[in-house]
Length: 269
Image 1 (tube, rainbow, N blue to C red):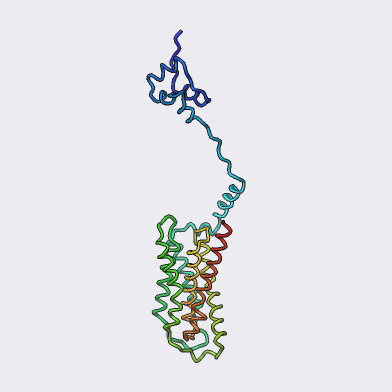
Image 2: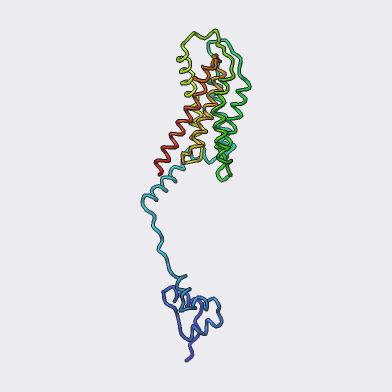
């Protein structure tokens, strides 16, 4: 009785079971099938190696819990806002900054003073440049780290530059107050004005990791928004007052961002 040659499926099943088939029926098949001949060469070493089944790696409960938490976090109004296109998110931030400036830049109870138009334009351009880099779409190459740091440092330095090159004057309609009192008042008022903008950035920014450049840059931009409002609101243009009461806002917010990034990095490690 002549045995029929084995076919490819039977040889595959034999290899999957952990054995290397042999015999005249196998030899008849491999003469005409180069693929099976390669699998069965050297007592089926290649075929047995390819047929080894690895058990699926089971994730730890902590890993699954973290994954479920990340998925659950991507729901609700904030997740919907973060999923908007980058131009839409930037427009919302610009509208928020404009509202902050419109509200905080009102002149109340004193004669109008000359507005530092050139510095206001510089503040706006620096803030826009930082926002375009910090809110760039995911997957798009970002500028080099040195370029990002230079922009952030420039945004932090501009209010100080205004202080160094401003003329010393004070509206006569403002009651005389101590230097520290006026500086502290502008500093607290500026930080209060920065809060809505910071909240908008938190709602719209897509990064889930508090990285240093982002948080420091956001603090610098929020400081610029506050300084634009203060430049329209505050009648005191003395260099020392602007340096102590205005320029310190962005620096303080940037320092808080750096501390937050450091704490997040320490927690992750």
